[in-house]
Image (cartoon, rainbow, N blue to C red; front, top):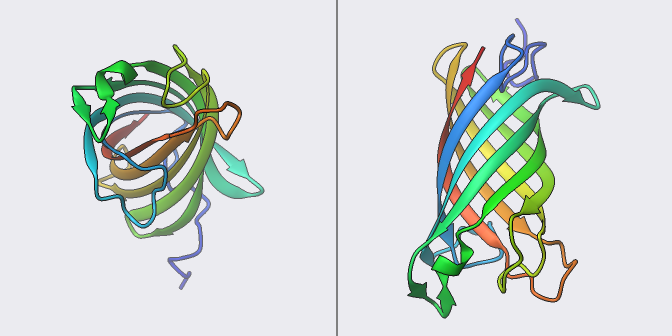
Amino acid sequence: MADPCILPEKNPFMGTYQQQVAFGIGQGFDTGILLPPPVRPVPFYIATFQYSQPTTFFRVPARRSLNISETLGFYRKYGWEWQDYTIPMIYFTEDIALFRYDSVYAGLGAGAGLQAKQNKRIGSKLIFEFKLTFGYNFNEQWAMEFFIQHFSNANTADENNSYAFYGLGFTYNY
């Protein structure tokens, strides 16, 4: 019997399908770090549409994605005018599978892209994304993913206060 913790031939994110769409929403936190979990939620949210295709990263199952996101901010909290950070973003990412056990999987991802305008929180249009994903496959086509996501400019500008989100997404494979 095969060890269920060994990554299978099929892609843990997408099974045997070749395309995936996903929609996710997340709650923002006033912190630049993701772990340990932040404790100061702010009136800042993210909505993301993602299109993915399967790939491998050094023979490890992965997915390559195009992401279109909108950050949504409301009123002032912890010294920040969150409404000033309602900004669309576009970025490319690659997520690699860390493990799969039955219908549960985890992934780690990174990417780069642009936000539509420069602001005081992230002092450049250039953004970098890091993401942890924990997913559950309902069946071969549908899955739910909990994500922890971090955006920054990787110190390419003077201001780099970053964005941090915890959220939930749903994927559909076809």
